[in-house]
Image 1: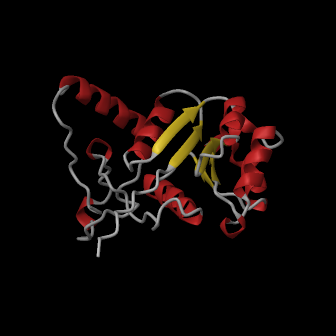
Image 2 (image 1 turned 135 degrees about the vertical axis):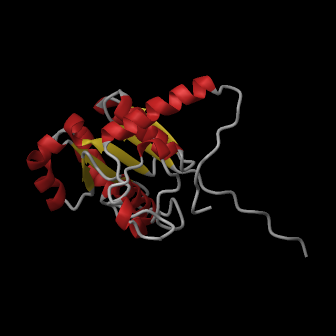
Image 3 (image 1 turned 90 degrees about the vertical axis):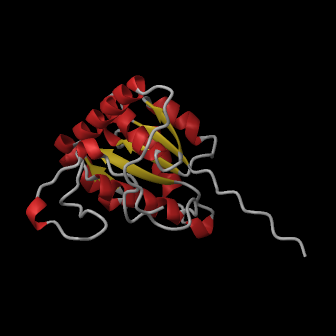
Length: 207
């Protein structure tokens, strides 16, 4: 009896609406590191165009670029609210600027839409992304740990009291937007200086 053919892993497609710049680049790099296909757009019209394709599993949108009464927000809210058992294949995660939290958070919570307030913890962000992808069956299991340790960004806040766990706690290792941008800058410089040499990850605890 012939062995069954291996099942190809499903391609995860993530669309990001954010302003162009180091933060968006760093966000893309973090998501890319999980092997997901990521596209960043900087305008609400482009977001609407991409939503019509139906190819995205998750949309991460800067709510400040959409507003709460725009066609982009209303369309994304409607699509992201459809339960998976009723054919929902897309989820939305909203990025809320810290200074604008009072303007958007109440409405997002009332609509039961997930969000993160900048600056956010990398662990929290990836866990939320993973949970949303599980909801639409884009990945099989939730992400409960960050796969890669960003050595240049690591914060040892409590070195003396650190646990012996294989994984760092959220308090010991957390990342702000500025730190992610700095990491992206360091990676770019490293790539230029080591062009032609394979990159080496310093840690991949889940593999």
